[in-house]
Every structure is written in structure tokens, then in C-alpha cells.
Length: 198
Image (cartoon, rainbow, N blue to C red; front, side, top):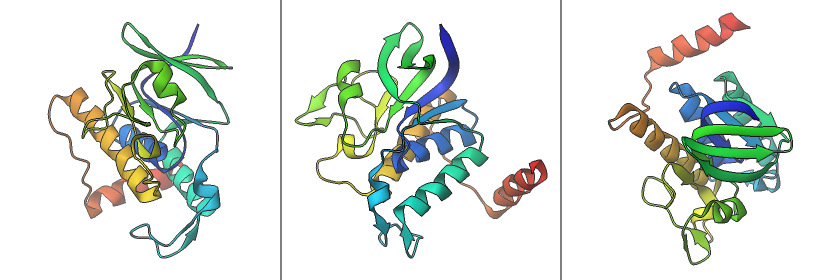
């Protein structure tokens, strides 16, 4: 039984997963995010994240989740993904609560590479092998952050990888290079609409 059908499923709720989900949903792709809150961010304090002077990792995560929720991402807190497999038109993601399908999957599970391995993604040594778009050897499956980098475990790098994956999914969907570039008028329109909904 398929519980949910989305355009994009993101597995992992750290900076990479949240960034991928935000960019995808913000730009019109129905996005489902599974977040078990096992991110290393709860051990971090950010002084090295551009644009942020100083913030506790857990406070950063709370702000980031609020932002992602505000854009309408279907975020499933504490719903663990047990398996990811290819199906005819994309991917099936299994949790204890059901099976979910999507055209694209973004793996953002930190240094845990088990799902990438079971999906059949190629590895380069100990890390998942991706191209510059963050796409794995399995078409339409993307991997991000610590799972694709040797000892480069930085929140800002992971967030960038997540954004890159989402933008490349959007480029595939739209058939041309897609850019997410906002101007002040865009912010007024978005946050004005959010305020009206409250």
C-alpha cells in the first residue's frame, strides 16, 4: 500500500535534508521529509556558518525546521526509513507506518550510508560516489553531506549539498538550468502570505 506519493522524498533532517526539502518545496515540488532527529547538530555550536554569528546547534535546528514547515514540506518527525528501493516510476521508501513513493529521492543521512548501499549506489572508497549535481550512480537518487565527503562534516557544506541536489532535481523537472534567486519583493510576497495564513 502506498501511503504517500510525492515528487521528492528526502531522508534525513539535518542541514542537508532540510535544505534540499526547502528548495524543492519552495519551487513547486511536492516534498516529503523523514526526520529522526539524529543529527550531529545537537552537539554543535555554530560560529562558522556564514550569516550566523553564534547559535547553538539545537536552536539552529528548531529555526530551520520552522522555516521548512512554513514552506509546506510534509515533514514526518521521528518516522524512520527502513528501506529505499527502485520502482517503475521512481522510488519506494518504507517506514513502519507505510510505503511512500516519489520520482526522486535525496539521501541526507550523515555518515550513515546503509540506505545508499542497499539502493545499489556506487561507492568511492567509504563514501557514496556522486557527480557535481549530487546525483548517485542510481538515476534520480541523490546523496548529500557527510555521506559523500571524507571527513568534511560541516553544517554549511551539508546545507549547500542539499540545495545543490534540489536545484538539480528542479533542473531535470523543468528541462533547463534552474536557479533559486530571490529579490526583496519575493520575500515580501512570501512572508506576507505566510502572515495572512496565521
